[in-house]
Amino acid sequence: MELPKYHETFIPILETLNKVESLKSRELASKVRDLYYSDLPQELLNQKTTSGANVLLDRILWGKSYLKMARFVSYPKRGVVQITEKGKNILVKGQLSLYELQNDPDFINYRESVNSEKHNDIELGKVKVDNASPQDLIDSGFSSIETEVKTELLEKLKELDPYYFEKVILILLKKMGYGDFIETTKSGDGGIDGIINEDKLGLEKIYTQAKRYNETKVREKDIRNFIGAMSGDTSKGVFITTSTFDDSAVKKAHEAHHSIILIDGAKLVDLMHQYNVGVQVKTVYEIKEIDNDFFEGE
Image (cartoon, rainbow, N blue to C red; front, side, top):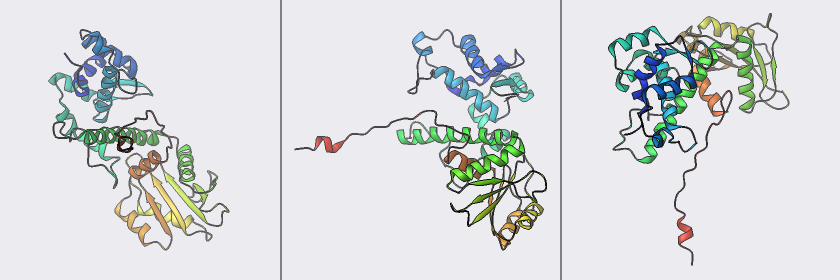
């Protein structure tokens, strides 16, 4: 006997959620364990990861996360999970493989929402265990966890109050090494959300504009208004959005006499992840190798 793989928990998770209105994540994991896997040997049920988490509960929670990516379940509020109509429909079929989920349009769109130029080619499910080196498997696992964190981070940003989103952007820019920032007043700010100092003395200023959009793309008009709002004491601006820029907006920014940097949702969560804004370190792993110098001493 062995513990189920995370993708083997898809149907048990959906069946459990189908019996109730909603459940908290940890409660869901415990119920799935008790309903479907209680006959496993106790040593398997108690098995821990290297970080001390229960392996089975961890796999169930990962199964829940992937079901969320493909919209088979939803999070109606923080920490709570419920089945969607799409999830109920798949229960009629009675099975859901990892291959089917990874090729589901909603899952593909969800993962691609945080893909950027830095995107790692190693993705979960694409590495063949039999042919992969231990390092390949580690890289694949880290890549999958990073993608999950970034996709969830982007969703949270899209749900923020627009004014707080603007502040998050200024906090990020300060973490990146820029000077103090000034939040502009919320009325009559002329399209400028914040002003940051490029140097410690504030001799060079950078204006910022932050648009918290869900699906709406930033258009040329938005860039034009931003450029128009920049006063004569600066020629530098950063326009940030949780969505994307349409082609005309990108062209307008590139052709402007001002220096305009565009940051879309994928790049934004890359930067937040890199500079630890809105995320925190959960676990640190040590990988050791032989110290050959130790054995080569006189």
